[in-house]
Length: 355
Image (cartoon, rainbow, N blue to C red; front, side, top):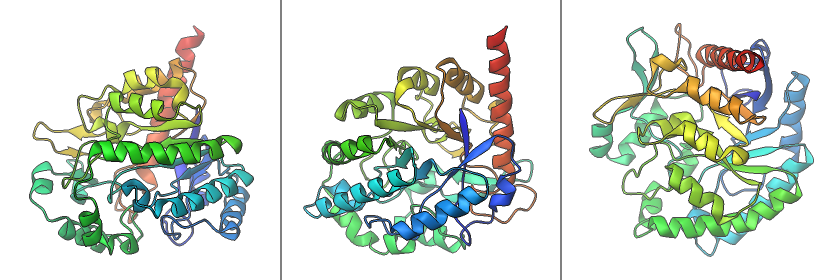
């Protein structure tokens, strides 16, 4: 297992590369060009500049999260081919600098959804929280305003320029079914996977977060059965999954350990984090420790060890601790604690296997 840490770039992150360098075992900076709008080709000079900065700090840039997919591709509009060509050229450029994995998602409009970015927990820390009843009774436009006013930093998936067309996007998705989305995803994969294969880059789709429909929008990356279907859309070792235990773990029906064992050779990238579920459908992002949430993190790490996982992992979201002012979910302290917990589980699995 190769450990990574997501970083949003100088000036767009409260965490410095020099701080990440002090977390044991982190070798990969999981990065993106967050100022490039979805659908646009990534400029080579910006790619080189970020690579040089990250490598000078002692890390590699093997994993990109994310190269965002333009809504026209998800909608299957005639204009999608132009955006797909831009996507292909970006893949080619990332191959030139040694990128090994590209994480992306195929969620309509919203990349993720929470109702509170700083829900206070029993110990005084705060975390990202999803309140089911509120989602069912809130106007998405009001939620967008709340998300953006509560963060001074760019929130991935909630960029103002992307959401400024919210009305027209909802109109465009009227009548779009899950089957339509499956077909548009198949078209996209058939175009990009051969390019990724030529450049030895594994494409890794992220689960929908949360893994169910919101605001009437179709969502398809939600379950073990759907991932099985996804992998058959384009059967290639370069067509893979970013297995996110937190996103999938919001639904108690998802057996993440079983997914790891079934899809072992198609998981180039793993997000390992915990969530605490409530009977009313709410959930909050707890610490990574197994007993603090509802997801079997110990079993998940053991499963990765059992399959001989050599891919990339990161701790994903963390709580906000000790008064840290940071991007919601992406502070330094709890993610560092999460990494050390994951390494502890991994080391224990290693020692057990050697007996």
